[in-house]
Image (tube, rainbow, N blue to C red; front, side):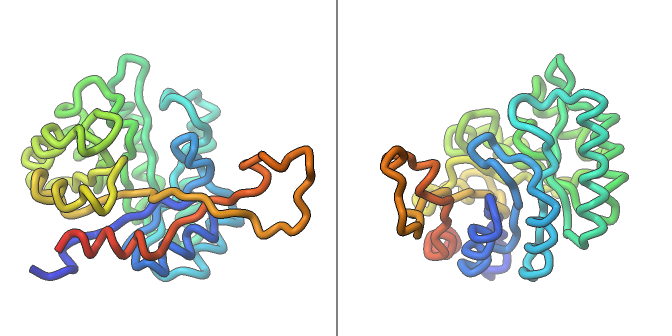
Length: 245
């Protein structure tokens, strides 16, 4: 079986973690800010610099804030502008997710973002895991033109949502890509591939590394926020792929 069958997507939080993920052999980057909040739209400068520096597929998340996925008109306008910006920068796609208050997919607005992104690809993120009817939602997302759904099978972590992920992948039958994400590590990625039949996988592999600051202010000596940075190990990225074979 050819290694090219599998796609590894890594969620990154800045330029440095993106650099590490690319070094580790990631096939695609979901570029975010604030991963601790589930990811929000990265800055103009971050998107531009990553696009210039890295040849891999680049999909910035378009999410104006943390929290729920029910957006005001003003927030939706921000999303439209950010989608257009990603297109102008030559990104390969964007990652979006919008719900209505009743837990259904916001089909109309999703379709507008897909249209605004064209010809970029569009992934619908784990807002999907908060929707009320995942089977109906998948059909709606196929109709809007989304190319991919990132899902943990409506569980906090993908290994717990294997049953639904498998069902969705079979029902999709190639019409949309089902990509497991959340809690995916080298220890479970092979199981997920075998149990779901999916060929694309998403992981953040989030870690921390100590700051290189030489001066540590005594009032903040125990502050991880002040003196540690987000980090991704290139070796851990490589291990994800190796574990599939």
